[in-house]
Length: 150
Image 1: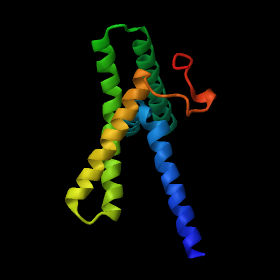
Image 2 (image 1 turned 45 degrees about the vertical axis):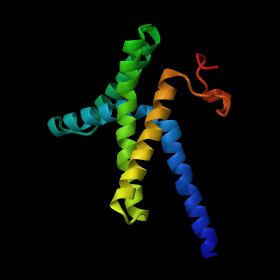
Image 3 (image 1 turned 180 degrees about the horizontal axis):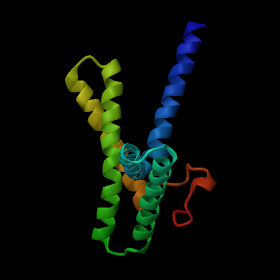
Image 4 (image 1 turned 90 degrees about the vertical axis):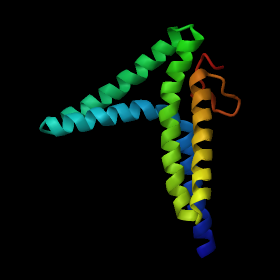
């Protein structure tokens, strides 16, 4: 019974990590902008709903502005800058998350850093590919494929 619980727990953890990396890595920049606006308004505005609405609007605005800028820009340099601005926060979050996960399972500080850097590189490259649109979409369900990637 203990082995089944450990197996199922490990499976759930691996699935959540995969979900975080695969599906949510691109949205790190809008999330952090929304969180920054939320806390900025929360400390200066009485109540909870005004900061919540402001954070949601800011995150949505950043995401929509990024998509429109990326869609209408033809300059490879500007597209690269926009993609880097959205892939870099994902890599930073992956580095910090990888360092915390590695701290639970790896004794050596050097190998923890190696694992965290590997996680940051993996997520950074994955985010870059998803943003730029060079990702292989054959493994995704068709409802998750953007029309310009099909």
